[in-house]
Picture 1 (cartoon, rainbow, N blue to C red):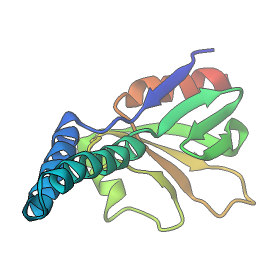
Picture 2: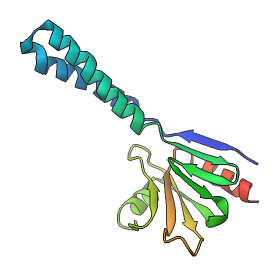
Picture 3: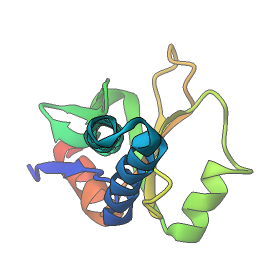
Length: 147
């Protein structure tokens, strides 16, 4: 069995934007005095950092005969063969090829993805789309666990 775990962390530039949000809040509160300005710097920066951290904390794992993607836990018996998508094909499946019924763990800052058909006839979800930085490794792990 080939284990797989990935955390889709936010890019470094987003952390820089969080710092800028704190500075912007400090500048907004500057006319009220030094103490409100410092509170705005700390509070605004902290809120922006929490937002970036929570958005970038989603994990994809292959554990115990199941695919765990964010809050979803999908048994591997309900899934077909994984399809590795390069950046161009992943963009197509995020836009004009997308099905509104699909389960999509989508992160715009991750260009590649894996698409897996859902073979369970009782499930209306046609496929699972997962943004991943290592689509070949995820597909290999899914294939190895199912074998």
